[in-house]
Amino acid sequence: MVNWIWLLFIVGGFVVAALNGNVEAVTQAAFEGAKSGVTVCFGLISVLVFWMGMMRIAEDAGILSKLARLLQPAIRFLFPSVPKNHPALGYIMSNMSANILGLGNAATPMGIKAMQELQKLNPDKDTASTAMCTLLALNTSSVTLIPTTLIAIRMNYNSVNPAEIVGTTLIATIISTAAAIVVDRWYRRSRSPIPPLKG
Image (cartoon, rainbow, N blue to C red; front, side, top):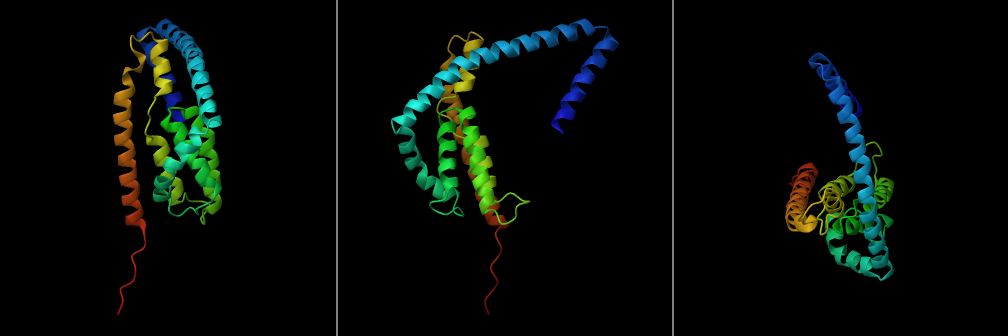
């Protein structure tokens, strides 16, 4: 569906440009956009490689495992249907740890593995389980201490202070994560079966 929406935008842009006699401007903008995309990607590589290296050092030093242990009570609260020693919990903690450190690219493989493990626990394979929905909501809204990708983009565009967004990003992601948890809890309660009346 998204592909069709983008195709509609592109074709619509060319049609409007042709009607206004500005096809050259659209072509130039397309090439400039492609050039800008490549430039931004190269700018992101250095920062992401740096932070991925830092994450590897943190993993080897045991910092990520300590962070995962700190997250464990929250994980147990958020995912009560997942058995205590199930592999999904390890992947969920790794995913959340990477998201907290702003490493969305590193978090994605862990999130996929967590979903695969949660699917094994899912009694209805055609419908997402409550645990899967919770993981998706948290992964989308995750608290971020260091917005690595945004800092890299701002550096690429010569921002005077690329890291000045850290505070506002932290506040915004705390609010979004809190909202995701509240909605998730409300939805779980509203979907839970009502116990039969006694007597």
